[in-house]
Length: 193
Image (cartoon, rainbow, N blue to C red):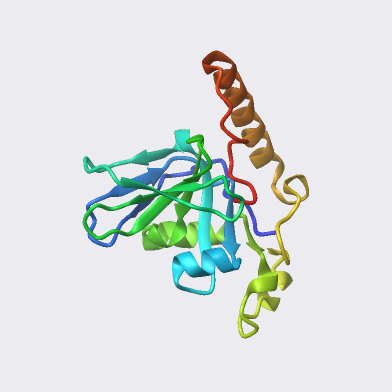
């Protein structure tokens, strides 16, 4: 696996849409980045893969006064997704899966160049590689110890310990909130979108 971000001297990651109307910061190192080759992500991105960096929503902050448009859409699981798009250039900056807003999937291509580089040097995996075009080679990634999975993966076998602990803490908070609100909103992270 790629090395995780060091917890010492972490400084925020930043990103924006193409027209810079909407900007954001990620204030903790991401849990993981998915490089997804499923046919759904290929269609959505208009490319060979989708690139989503997972972060708890509490560590994701909009830094511009303009709010994104939230547009609902389908997913293969049927749970749905909400895409956050710039109201001017219509770039998708991030998304949520299901009805919850506790985990943010940041479209990594919207990160500023240095932030993008840092994310790609961090914990990442290639998923649904069975659907990638055959001309996309992943041997170099395998040699670097980056996970490559034909479909999805078992989280406990892939995520670093700290990321699992953070997710567990998030899930405990979500469960407490659901009990208080009396709602049932999915599992909190959109696994298997």
